[in-house]
Image (cartoon, rainbow, N blue to C red):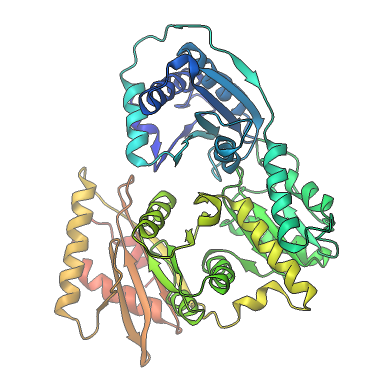
Length: 502
């Protein structure tokens, strides 16, 4: 078993159901042992004093994998605490919560992916494991021989979700009116949990006075029978939009299976995700901290940059990957730059006020607080998006790299495109904040830098993701045609998907 094949960014992930399962109970048990040994080295505590909490989303493989991971923890001599159904953000909050405070925690989830997959997300007192820290855990697992129990550690069942829920409730009460126990009275919110772990959020809102009629798919179902639990999925977003319109609600909220990502829709059913979601939370935070820097991933639109600047902030594009974005925001703050938010277009959002934990439920809670405050003033939340210029066209393409050393080929192609741009700099404008791949903008229809493409390397797959957007009709084809000129002589890159859109 090559444990490195289970690595997906800073998480472990793999097929967990069926004959081709890679993430088996034996593998989960080994990873439990490996995490104990990693924590023992990190904390310098005796193994028998180490406790690790475990939670899971609603996937059908969750109970067995959680149990096996707990067995590995106990076999290594540490203590395991089973939180049962939980959310990914709650697994880190537990470490920070008095009365719980395990040394580490593990969430069994594959986020928005299909039911056959599952995975493990690891947390310590410093937050989620980064790329290199996960490498260390996988390396320990890779070199473990037959697991033999060294002592009789304990597996204890202890619920935590109620404590996490109370944390969110108090956030709402304190922000709106500490003297009122039902501060959301008069707000109609439709919740779509996608049959994942977040169905409790609707009951929590109702306990605070909100009307939640029209909420859907709140019951956990590990097969996700209604739609994929993904705030980027078109079917999922169409479903929550329709539910909001049917119910005449003020807004709707939707979570992925483990609730670290979210999106909303406004009272008209309009989707507020990706660039719109970033713009909305940026406006709220910049109203509180003028001049702050907002860190996003690399594929955000030029209209978003203008919007953030109009609100008095700075837009800082960085690499794709939620850990990349979060780590860069933390680094900027340590360097003295005021940075309250790290957010990906996928919906991963981490706020400084919440320990830079990417928590979709916390994000939505902040948005609902603002929605209630604006409703009391006769306004809607989406009014904050006035002035956001959105692209007329956008497309994402994946170009296969047909070489064993795909990273080297992709790097060479990016360097060649950069060189090509420098030779045609009157037309090709290299982005000044080019921190991943190559981002080039063009003047189309006499509109300055009105269209752009971003070509980058996928970290794990032999493909080059290509994003393009335009503020004018026909601009995407113009810029992709320009890129084709540069790539036509790259035999190891399959340009057929690019040609298909031209």
